[in-house]
Amino acid sequence: MAGEAADRCGFWLGNPHADTWPIYHRYFGTTTPEELRVRLGDDFRWFCPQFEPGVYQAPDRSSLWGPFVERSPGGAPPLLAQCETPEEVYRLPWPNPDYLNFDSTLAALRAAGPYYRAGGFWTCFFHELMDFFGMETYFIRMYTHPEVVQAATECMGRFYYTANVRFFEAAGRDMDAFFFGNDFGTQLDVMVSPEAFDTFILPWFRRFTDLGHQFGYRVILHSCGAIRKVIGRLIEAGVDALHPLQARAAGMEAERLSREFGGRLCWIGGVDTQELLVRGTPDQIREEVRRLRPLFGPRWIVSPSHEALLPNVPPENVLAMAEAARELA
Image 1 (tube, helix red, strand yellow):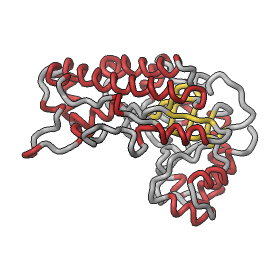
Image 2 (image 1 turned 90 degrees about the vertical axis):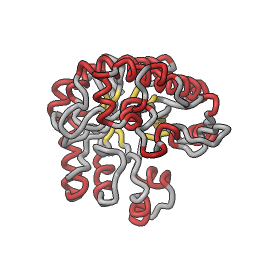
Image 3 (image 1 turned 180 degrees about the horizontal axis):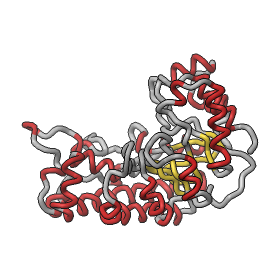
Image 4 (image 1 turned 180 degrees about the vertical axis):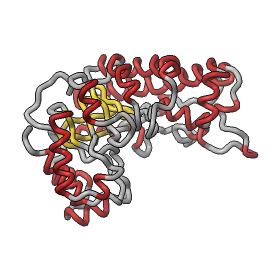
């Protein structure tokens, strides 16, 4: 991680799409994700209770965010979009952390081998609020109803904060890093102005990074897109590592990131999944990893520029990326 020396770069396969795993298993002769990770020399394991079935066990069997994503009768706007005051927001059926069960995630975490283990709730409060309001409504409400957006952020933030406290207390030293995600960028720019970022996102974001550090974890942020404008803010807020480095997004060139932020972060990702890993040859993949190493390394985990590898990424290119990552710096 940032500030620590390493004799080589790490490697993380990422979290391939469900349709991709069978293709890779056929190519590599494996049957489980763990077998494939071992085959490729993957150094990183991710344990996110939020994505485990059965983690939220409400008496009425509702899902974690069910009332917020279900269609309202008669085509009415989503629940959050109907709120005109903070009081209406507070009355919504926000999830109860008392209904959380971490048994399956903790079992997997404790069964992991000698790998770097990252976890915690995905805590994607920014883009979940975007989904629950509706993207356009969410951004407009930042200007027309800022107190409603703040109230919704507070309610969601309190749930994720409590959920993470409970998971961290249970995980203890079996985990190395708090890994959470909020996609702040598009292909061209950040989604909101830096001023709106400071007002609506950064206060709770800082609480989450502080929480991870309080438990002795490094903090890894996943954020897709062209986020260079806010990377300085993210570092100041306590981010230790940044993922996935969307290589073809505006302003996210490895040379620029290295020049402006090198030595202040651990980098995770950066091997282009939009063009290179899809259409390149294995030799081109190896050369790209070698090109990126002096820019990002040695505090770099070689990984795709988006973790959800799609079926259009050939397995031989994944193998080339993994082999190049294992070369000593």
